[in-house]
Image (cartoon, rainbow, N blue to C red; front, side, top):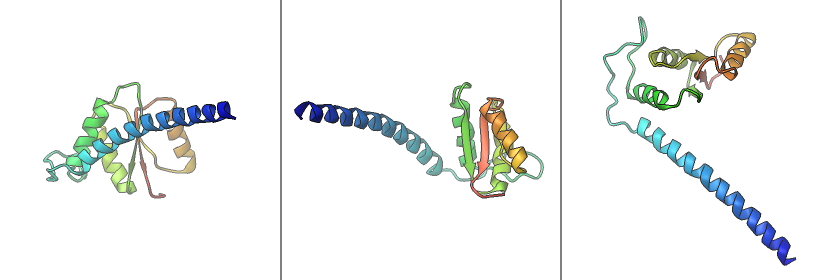
Length: 132
């Protein structure tokens, strides 16, 4: 019985150590996100994403910087609040050196976009949290 308890305790400890590692990574990600949302300068930049695209602010600038800092062999999934925000975010991210896709269109088109992303034809996929 004692050996069974020791084994279970060792398994629980190993599980807690894995959770701690995941928690550390989560804390780093949350800290980076806080830096985005707590940025002191929320003024719009004079830059434009293109004709008819609204000016973008600090959050998108920091997002671009974060994506540029990610190794090229890694991929990023960016969620936005609405289809309009997805479109603007995609336009802004296209100014980075990374290939960007956005999830839009019919189910068939979305399937092809997801397949392209899974096949690493793009490093960034921008998707909406709302159904289109």
